[in-house]
Image (cartoon, rainbow, N blue to C red; front, top):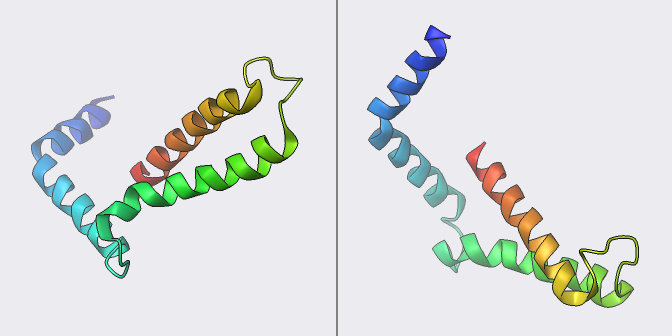
Length: 92
């Protein structure tokens, strides 16, 4: 348990370095893109839009899931899941 607290203390102490490394990683990832930082938001939005077109509009409502009825319910569920996925993917 002491080792875990030691790691957290080191992370807090070196937070500016962690932020610089994360910013550098994002800059390297999107350096060759024409849209630049806008692509951080455009890429997930396009993927969510394609999934909405393929599953919600094409298949209609889902009778087995009462929370995802119609297009609005599907958009809410897919957006919640994809935002969580993309956040965790980039955080890991």
